[in-house]
Every structure is written in structure tokens, then in C-alpha cells.
Image (cartoon, rainbow, N blue to C red; front, top):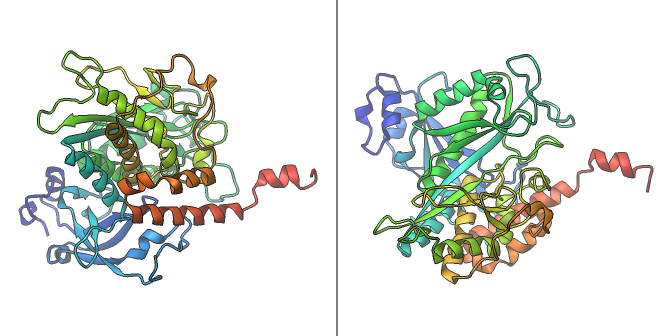
Length: 455
């Protein structure tokens, strides 16, 4: 296939531009599984154009990060029914790192009666957004993506090390916002920009963060599902750019000891669907009741979904005092020590930042969980605790410190299960318990060093 006009009008402009004048070889039909890994199948472009859907087994959502199968199939057992996967052509985008012209297209999962599969992560986010729409509200988000560029790590027993930069030296830590540090990764960043442009993504900025080889990419605000799609795509894009230059990109929450972790900060605002007005800004520019109710929702309910925002045992290594990650859910204006931050902005752009989510979370689920907590605050009309002034690291921690504790809170949160979906909540809990149990069977080097001959 070579002509862009052979495709339906729903195809985005960037995708049309990419295939114009090319022989389109392949289409990758993909869907995000529970960890956020792209699953699916590749097929010849001509075959893709002749069919409206394809099948994959629902068991792909029952698989843990290690490839094991959780006992999540339900009362009827492990049947492995086929799902009907239908393309969302509005998500079509280039795979510019491939040798032949290839498009990626995200698919949505349905059962044989045409009902959305409740535990498919993209459907979870759509469910939450629909609750906002039913109230006449339009949620808007802007995620920030932090990640590390590291030296290739082929032996899991060895510590992860920073990549070697353009100068021939390992990437330096404690160089936040340094342009010289960014220049060390110039060829990789050039490829990230080129890939993003080919895919039609707009990067709001790239900065050096505080960790050795740690970068941050900011995305422009927009629709939650669209932005989750972009984060999903960006993770693959960044990994491919890094591999071109013989290094790894990692989105682990805490890949290197004594370095800051990587977050996916989520900025939220809510618009009135009829007027387009920001619900967080009053007619004279003041902060509204809705503004405070949303904050209260985050304070009250985020602890219950930490297991979604911090989905792995490694995630909790990020919540350390004075390491650029929150230890509590205080809120403050222009205060990066709090878990909930109100950034400096114009009245029209007033927003609330959730700093709890790690970059290791599934973007669909992380954004859905954060929006769900804010939604509950808007419905309950609670007031938050008083604004925190000063260093929030001097206060007490009020978020779970380990995955097991976080899962306990998540499993008890029946009110949030109704918003995220009861069947999703059941499957997610089963999978995370399986992963946690598997981790507890691993004996760490710390235990061997300090306990073997001393206890």
C-alpha cells in the first residue's frame, strides 16, 4: 500500500504524511496489558485493510510482569476466551525505527457481545472519563515523564550504571537543568525528537533531572485517553532511540541506589463541557469550591490506589525523604516537597499536580486512578486539610511504604472499585498479590551480607 488516501479519514495527519509516497509494509495491532507492555500482532497492511477486528485471548491481562499467570480467570476457570480487538484509527502512528514502513494502531478490547472488557487498562480510563462527562465535566491532564539512560545491563545481579555520554565519561548526577548534561545525550535526544515528530507528538520540553543520566519529557495538556496513549507510545519510542546508541532507557521507579527515582507527575484541571470554563477558577480569578474538593479527594483516596500508582516492590524505594518524591499527601502552592502541588500558572491554566505516581505505572491506570480520587472529592464535596507551608519532608509520612500494605488498602476500597470497575479491581489485586508473593521468595544480596553470619 502506498497512497494515504486509501485509508479512512480517521487516520491522523502525521500518519498520512508518514505513509505518503511509501509502500506501507506492515501494521502493528497493539493493546496495553496490565503492566503497560504492548501486546498484539503484526500483519501485512493489505490484510489489515480487509478486516474490521482480530482476536487475542483475554489471558494476556492475567499475566504478571515476570510472565507467570495469576489466578485471575474468575469462577469459570482459565478458559482463555478470545477478545474482539477493534482498531482506534485515531491512534495510528508511525513506527519510524523499523526498516520497512510500519504503522502502529492501538486497539480496544470487547467481548463477543460487544461489551468493553472491563479489565483492559484503556477501558478502565475510558470508564472514569465517562463518569466526568456524565456530570458535564471535561478532565484535562498533562503528564511528565522521567526516565534514566543507563549502560546496558545484561546481568541482573549487577548494579545498574549510568550510560557513557558524548564526552566518554559516565553521566553525572546532581546536574538538574544543566544544558551541558543534556548535551551529553545529544544524539539520543535528536532521535527522540525525530521519532516524536514522525509520530505526530508534541514535546513541551526536555530537561536534565537530578539523577545520573535522568531526563524528563513534558507533554502538552489534553484529553486523558489521548495523553495516556502518548505516554504508552513514548515509552517504546524512547527505548528504541536509546538502543540505537547502545544504551538502555529504563522507566523503573528507582533504578540506581542513592539517586532520585523517576515519577510520572500528573497535572489535572477540569473544564465545564458547556462553557469551557476551568472549574478551578472563579469568575474573579479566585480558587473555587471544586478546586478544594478535588484536592480533598486526592488526600482522602490516593492512599487506596497507591498500589496502582506504585505497582512494584521497587516503586516504594522512590518514596524517600529529600529525594524529590513525596512521603505524604500534604498540599501546597509552588511547593515540590508536598505530594499535591499547585504550580504557578495563569488563572485559566490553574491546575493540581499529583506527584505520587511513578513512571513505572501503566499510564492508563495511573491517570485513571488519580482522576478517580479527584472525582470522588468533587462528588463528596469535602474540604482538604489546611495548606502545608514549609518543608513537607519534616512532616509525617501518610502513604504506604511497601506493596503489601498498599494492596491491603486497595482491596478494602470498595468505593473506588465501583469507579475503576469491580472486575478490573479483582483482577489487578490477584495479579499484584502473585507478583508480591513471587518477590518474597527471592533472597537479596543485603540479606546474605548482613544476616548470614550475624543473626
